[in-house]
Length: 163
Figure (cartoon, rainbow, N blue to C red):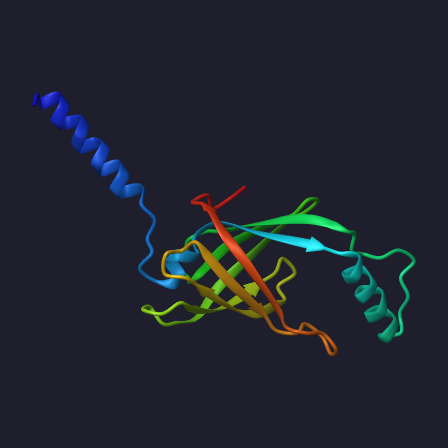
């Protein structure tokens, strides 16, 4: 084999090795572009109206609309201060947030994350990221009295860390 072919082969192998995703820990698997698909049914809209009624408020028009919606999440690597960028994009809006790892068992699948929103408020979420880094389940505790815990499933899309 010629030196040129060997050189090209080495470059290709190095490139593929460097571009591989780090799946060694839950926090390394989190980095990249994730997507959540949510289907809103007429039943969901009715539940929303009922919830507002129970809270003593009325809706002139439901906030939820029947349909299938995608939300994209872009997790960047943590910086030296332990904070990472999280950009979420839905059909109409872009949210710039930050995240911080609060707890992680490196050989497990669970992460405790603090999400820091643009207005500096925060919430704690729990993520379960499978070892192959394809799916993660997100648990969000109730945000207000009378609310329920939210559980979402997200799918890995690619290694992009911004839209």
